[in-house]
Image 1 (cartoon, rainbow, N blue to C red):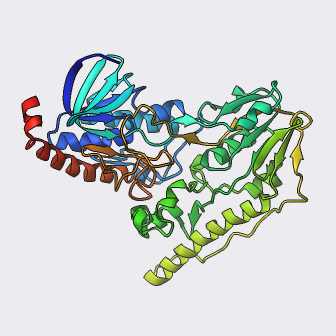
Image 2 (tube, helix red, strand yellow; image 1 turned 180 degrees about the vertical axis):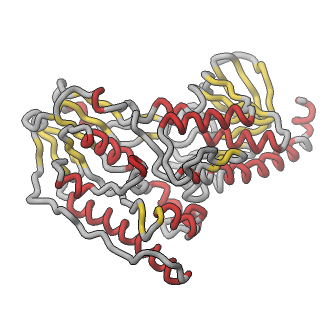
Length: 424
């Protein structure tokens, strides 16, 4: 792109989700001129990449965007998809966020002391840039899907909406993270025969000893724990989130119970060949591992209750209600009546438009609490950017406030650079 610079702003925020809007709030509070570039619409991911029955898995009280706490009357409930979209859109309107919807960044580069943002409408330069686009960009589907029978309909979780969207017949759901387990439940409750490929994602109790587990974990400071103090350090960023649901007022997701009700559980998918799907012999280990995390969380809460001498219902532990039978290494999808596959296999980051030396060998933007090695470039909204709450409504505002102070300092320093002052 060769267009001449058409505009200059002190700060460019890329991404109009909760991260970009939180950044905008703090910049406006400090009187810093800025623009938010959003390729789609505000709250795009919530609106367009979630299924119809989607709801939050954390209680509404955790919706704590800066200056915009949860406004409803059910703080212990779980907002549905349309309510989440309304919450985020209402936030954008309330703070008067300067969002350019439908205008994405085709290339981000650097020229001298300034950053160059190329768009379909021309070029904008900025003294500082906040990458608030999260880390879930491109739906990932394993290549094994190419070897499934052509008649089987395949959709990614980002495109799944409801059971009626899929043709009649059994459904194979690949992946048991939050999306996979909730979509499998959605299909199961609709009376569909579901085959679920189970990975190593952990599970969490919904309610334990009289309170939502999220409430207990918040009291324990788990959402405020810095990544630097987590036992896994930065490796925790690659761990799957615990599965549970806010559906129906909130409940556990127990895959063993689903199996008793007719859901077919399998170990990880290895490959597809000869018209058959091949699985690893790890189903029992994956279920046991998820339950161990579940009971570990219960133990953590027990310890807190005892140390704080709190009154609460008695403790308990989850005991398996079902165990896998003999290992079945393969499945013929046609013989099993499978007519569709929902790939709940996550997303891959796409930073190809960022022409800056920011990334490690895995393509992850290197940073320290959102501050990159390049002066004036920041990232916001990534899972475990600083704490477990960083990628959530409850913690992204705190990260934005921290970055705002870094941006203020950067702009003050830039004003002392002769070349910067000469450029206006």
